[in-house]
Image 1: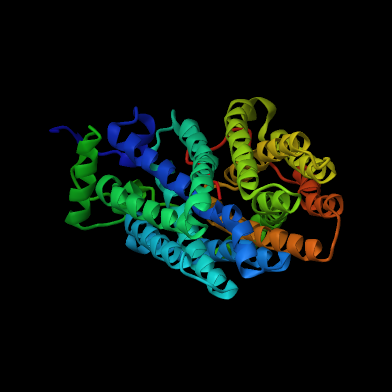
Image 2: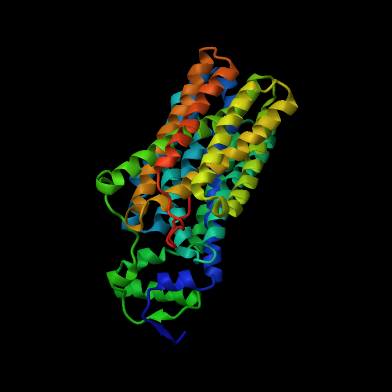
Length: 449
């Protein structure tokens, strides 16, 4: 292309129709997110046969559930920032290979703590991967299509978990639970190969470079997207680098109270959400369902969750984000209570499971949408990382406490009531946060873990 451009390529991409390269980049990130949905849920799919084979208690199973979430928190805090130094694309590829290796090794474990250690390793890679692909989606989507791209990212998780669950039913019945982890390792290897071939480097990261090599790479991407090229390396004033303020900046001054409130909300929401997400299949098998029945319940949860994500995308702007958040948090808490009180019949339990799934994934999606609308641009990414770390704390404590209460012979109604309280408490904090009327155009796509 012979024309030249003196404007920021980031602004140009945001205001122009999406090119084929942009569509491919976003679609690949959605595919990777779908695989992550399966990688996160794989323990829930295999918990029952692993528990029988190894003679695990409910507390032991809670450790298996929580170990991956601990790794995800560590990855989000310590691994994701490496993408700012070495590039988004290399980090995504490295994390995919780590997931492949750790999932493959998990298939050959025979002890609880070996399994938990490998789940931490897998979680660390997933934590770094999720942050990177969501930044890539934000950078390669246009302003006009950003909402659609974010919605597709939200759908990726439940769809990946649902498809993985269907395949897991067959694999567990025919080859045993270890084959499910072979599947996860193979899928991660495939996604790494596709990333090497199809995914370009982040434009914002390339624009931070001052060398002619960076200019050459930027112009190569611009040409592939049929956009005017740059005539000189971009300056920092036009490069619009990703905001990377230190964590201390959101723990003081005008951001301190926002950070505390959002951290508490995330902790409460993920406490209840990850209890339901991880324990539902195991609870159903303890009520007499087969392993297939327990996994089928997860499929119902994921399918109703996919429908919820679509509906939330349609109605969030009409109802207002804060009102929508309060509504879905209340629905999640009440549906968990319903699951605890439902009679032990197929129809009653599956209806309750469908309700839990509907509000579970919409609660996650609306939580991720809150941060970009509460914090200003200069601290938005740091705030998102901090809130995700808070959420992982709740995500670890919820499944673990569930195991302790079940081992202590609490009734289903009692422990479901207790574990619903954190997300219901989050509703009380919603009036204290101030949500912007319209999100900024630089909103980062939300992760579906």
